[in-house]
Image 1 (cartoon, one colour):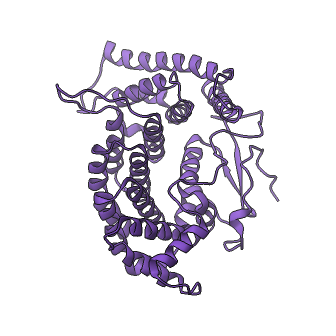
Image 2: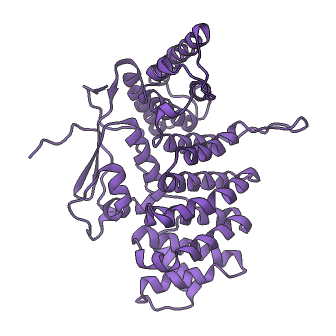
Amino acid sequence: MGRRKSQRKNIAMLDSDEDNSSVSSSSTARSDLMSVSGTDDVQVDKDSLLEQALDALYEKRGSTREKALAAIIEAFNTNLPHQFVEKKFATLLHQCLNSIKKGSSKEIALACHAIGLLALTVGSGDNAREILDESVAPISHALKSSSDSLKTVSLLECLAVVTFVSATETEETERSMQIMWQLLHPKLGSNVVAVKTPAAVVTAVVSTWAFLLTTMDGCSLNSKYWQESISYFSTLLDKDDRSVRISAGEALALIFETGIEKLAAGNKTTPDGSVLEGNKYREGYTHILGLKSKILNQVRSLSAEAGGKGSTKKDLNSQRNLFKDVLEFLEDGYIPDISMKIGGDSLQMSTWSELIQLNFLKHFLGGGFVKHMQDNELLHDVFGFTPKRKHILGVEHQMTSVEKQSPPPEP
């Protein structure tokens, strides 16, 4: 693989928006916590405020629980409360799971976000294992019964983050990816009519699936699985919704980054261990190459698409830039070089896997992204990032827009 020779100013993969629909603003969440706890003393210890919010999760009124969850999310975004987590980890987890089982769509979305933040805060270890073991079944059940896009997207993102942090075995990651995949390819009974999946849900499934794929060894997946996913993502490139097309483009770039053609050429065995010979082997490899040829034509068209009715210039430019990157990668192997400013530090990325991980976590963390990037050891390990200064006042307001540029010169 090579690095791209030309450098454009911006890359579409990294969103510039810092907002997150399920997270209240700082002032709103703090005032909510005051109303939940019944005190006006703003000097109360942060852990004490968290404990009061946690107590409010036992309240019968759903709006009270929603305010408490919003306050907990705000606390985890602005501070990594390790002492509180050490004492109240299990209680917080199970109260959030209770909200997923019985809450409104808004409460479920907030609870999902809180569980994801809890997983990112505890990092790897026994607590992370408990989050995964306890969360997968209720999340899977809630996904099967969900008809609300906000609820479904939140559940998918929660499952993705929990699996990303906690899974230690390939089978565990595959299980979560299969749960996601079944939302797009449900097993229907003979008298069940298929319902069209909303674009927001399709985008979320593809994004979360690709996020987990970044942790997988491509050699562990059989060729039939690859062919199915590539073929499906190719059909998504023709959809009307731009977010669907972009998520599919990112997923395809990641798949081909694994060296899928080499894997297909070398994968002569089926999942049951039997060997493919002659025509069957050649057909599988030829099919992958045929799909790539089709995708190249689609990507080339999307990289130069003209603006249509109702399309904004920003969205159109995001699509063009992304698919120009994908096209250069598929044709020449050039990988986009990305440098992102976080406070006074620079984070360098040079693979699609890193870009997808960063883009997803930046979206999930919203306003807490910079705080976690500076103080969260799990994210330091994920991105090989060591901030020079871990505690910078007001750092949330110092992050610049993401720029594509050459790596800085060595000192």
